[in-house]
Image (cartoon, rainbow, N blue to C red):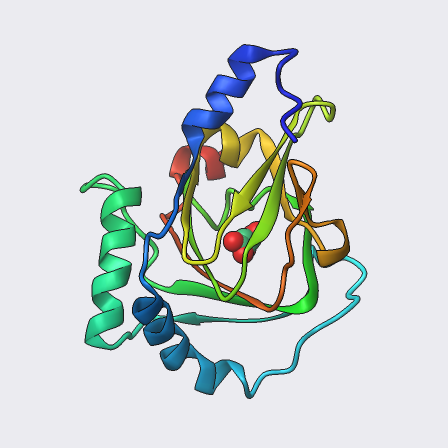
Length: 198
Ligand code: AKG
């Protein structure tokens, strides 16, 4: 699942800029996040087959206010992902992918998001594929376990597309990874004025 051996320096750059923290939250903390977002999410419809959309079978929202327990969890995410003087987006992005849902390869727009993306994966394991934007033969699959946190920055965020494999293609090191419904809770920092003004 890693095809980066032809260019070991790129493999290293990727490994140091896409980090996974397994069991970042407990089962109780996962439930606490779900309990807060589910009443709102369950009223939205899943969206499908928008021809130009990167995401299929999803519903999403952004949230500013969280209860005390969840504010603490998100504080731990922010503390790990962002140095103290980095301006963070206050809104947290919540993406709910139904079992049939998947995310097509894309790079997050530099206009809307800074150099770091930190995402908690809730409810299911899944596989994220990172493909070098210019050299498509260079890619790595990353296992996003239920309750893990990933932090994607630098090379991984700017030079690689990321996608979340549909259940029928969901393999990691040759092993089937069942992807059920997945909710991701994503913190980002503010876009940099240098990148957006060019
Ligand atoms: C995006 O919002 O751009 C994503 O690719 C979401 C990634 C995730 O669900 O962890």
